[in-house]
Image (cartoon, rainbow, N blue to C red):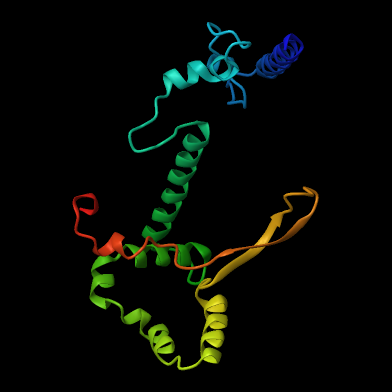
Length: 198
């Protein structure tokens, strides 16, 4: 155990040295992957290494009420999502976007999704063609044909598949299959009228 602690401490010292060496002579300090200020040195790493490694960060960054967990990963995700949202909103506002450009397509797509009045006005009419195809199913062969159509054009009605790492041989990439569907909650989520559902 002491050997592991010595290795961990040595590793931290090396990282700190590299950090200090890289920052010397620079006016602007850049964010690095390891910040010594996050350490809680009041806790022995032999007793609770997690608390030692990130205790101060955890105390200074309580979990916001809208999250079930909070870490630098959620902070990075939120920061990235904010940047992406700003790019999309600016694309939607842009009146000078070249027709057919990515900026114009992204802006139009976002604006279309945000036009709730138009969405309410159209109702389910944009789905009519797909619903008519489903209504025309009369045999098992039609189900197979429509499933193929949905996998090609709509989504994955019965199963999803893609490449995943092999659980037994991490150097291999294999096909992985999972259950398909809409990914929506069950029917009761939409129609239940009990106190929990309100």
